[in-house]
Image (cartoon, rainbow, N blue to C red; front, side, top):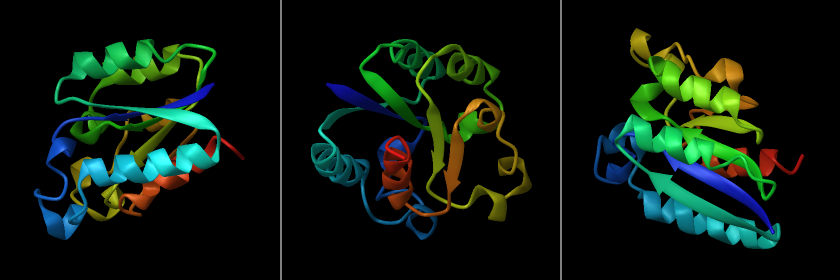
Length: 142
């Protein structure tokens, strides 16, 4: 069965509680439930992982190189701006990766404007809140 993997980086476990004026009041679990329902309509599975540790994210990316995995949705959080190790892991795997950010990082602090990961991704979705995950999910079926 086809599979999509959703990887979330640092502090995303605090969604719904953290800086709600920027990230909203919905939790990570609510986004996961929404994607599970969407996956059901597309006859595929979706696996979720969240970590505040760079190495965990890299290990999970490496495990995505399977025939069943048709895509990866990655919100690397703050690692977006400086993790060449995550960038290299994205470049090393076969399934396409879509980078997602809940807020519009380009309208925020200047240090958030540059992604070292985006150049090796299928695309980048920013500023659509948790709906960005659904847009990324659907991109694997275009």
